[in-house]
Length: 144
Image (cartoon, one colour):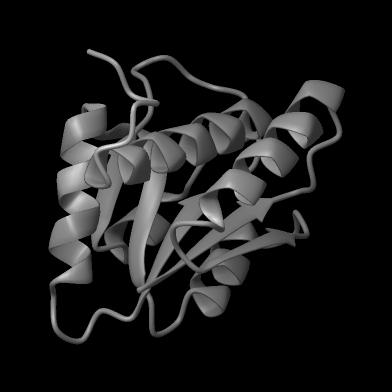
């Protein structure tokens, strides 16, 4: 299974760029990963068109609250699902996702009930995916 992360806008904040580089580098040892930054015009259409033929997971404060272990189990479930070759995580811009986009996603996950700046959401998602893969492999990064 291949992961795609589609985000509106490139990270402009220093900490976000550093976090993205750190965790994409770590994640690539576990799973094929594409990270694509899209322009901010017509965000929903851009995210939907770039995620065609992928299992879509929108990141949105209205989504399901998952623990790290549930994310790990969810990734395993998707990997074991016939027909799912690509999973696309969709991160909206400053205004979040439209209802129309959310309706076209297979799942909606929430990283927090708080509204989160989209660059921070990207770093949190990458770290949680990395953490979930270390859990799957029984590596010591995740401590409970």
